[in-house]
Length: 149
Image (cartoon, rainbow, N blue to C red):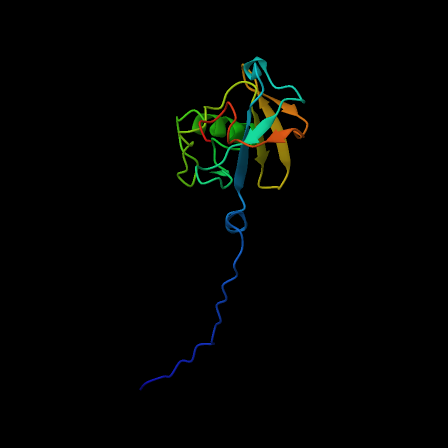
């Protein structure tokens, strides 16, 4: 004897969303390199900053998946510091552009966490310090932080 079994029909829909919506447990990082003279003495609110970009000029957004190692904003900033010093890659395999100087004391790192909360951290001699959102932004091209012309 044969029994016929019918299955209910299912519909699968694909919804296009940003990468971070597909993996909500990520930290997104933007690095601002300090272009002021003597910037290695530390960040000051009036210092001009330039956002790190890819060689084609598009924004460089480093992405780090939350893990045991990257569990808060400061750990994500530390991971970005490693990428910015050619010691690692982000979770998408991105590396630091060769034509931008390494991340150093006086630079500012913006970290946006899985909760969509952002913080700006200045790179200090040891660790990071929270700072207000920078207001003096400049271009990377032609600055002392890059060989781009």
